Amino acid sequence: MNPKQKVELYFRKSQKAFSQPIIKEFFKNEKNKQLLEEVIANPTNENTCSLDNRFKSYYQRARIVKYVSTLIHNYSIEYDKKDRKRRKRYQLTLDNTNFMESNYESVYNHEFQSLYSSLPDQIENEILYNALNKLSKKQLKILELIYIYNFSNKEVANCFNESAQNISSLHKKSLKRLKLIISN
Image 1: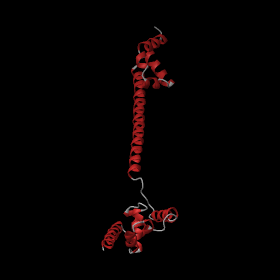
Image 2 (image 1 turned 60 degrees about the vertical axis):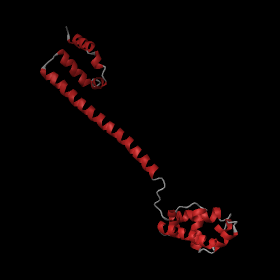
Image 3 (image 1 turned 135 degrees about the vertical axis):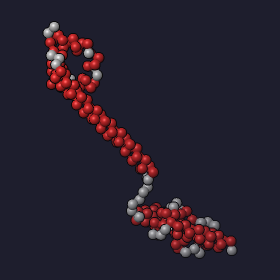
Image 4 (image 1 turned 90 degrees about the horizontal axis):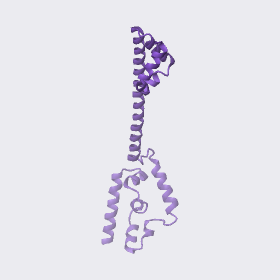
């Protein structure tokens, strides 16, 4: 049997092995294919070891590339998950403390001031109206921001450059004073 027939017979017998993607890629390189044909035609220990070593190094590189590719893929998915979770959790993180002041000014001065000049102007009950007029300007402004503009204590605190605890305390005192004025 001549060397060409040996090679053809070997390829027919090993057709299932040559259908594997890693082996297909390995033998796309002409040097590797020629080395295999040499091993089939002239099976020396040196030829066999040479082919074996080439395949081992190719296979090792392929595994490393696959591993790194999988790492990159999984890392990017995890990064996206973490980023989405972070964005969902911290939607309104404000770095600029002056933002609330400017937001308050724009909302207060433009949108609502045309409708109402102050909180007492919205009150129809004469007793409550008189009680509101007896509060200080700051107390009235705090009540206005909380009840008309739906600002939180923290947002009101940013407007006055004070702590949220202080605004909460002033809010409670304002309500107590209103209750005291109305009850008398």
